[in-house]
Length: 141
Image (cartoon, rainbow, N blue to C red; front, side, top):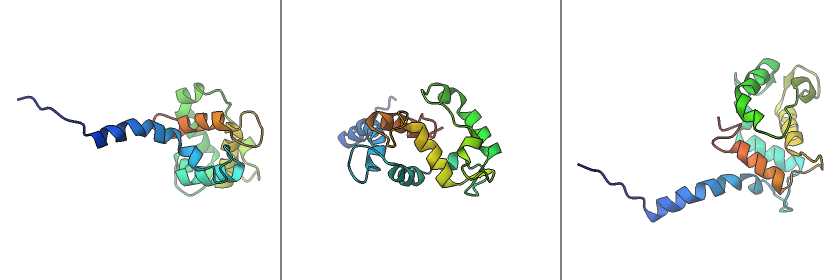
């Protein structure tokens, strides 16, 4: 006996809307609605998305150099597809205490996504960020 599955209109809308919704995530972080993200908006959104957990292997709220290296290596091929460079752990550790807290972690990624070093993440740069936050992106793996 053959089984036929039907996709309801509501289900079709949900399937079609999913990629668009994922692409709009960073736009929701733009609390002053100026079309770009300043470092505060980015930090709030990035923290809320839980991206630090992908690096924080032991869940202690801090990232050691070993955790940073392990996760960076795991990103391997996906990272190679990006046009931006990975910051070293030492460069990310602003207070040189041997650990990255969430502020240092977020600042590192803000500076990575702010490719033109304008002090804000514009629409094009947000697209790169949304790709990384998506299911097949750097943080979705």
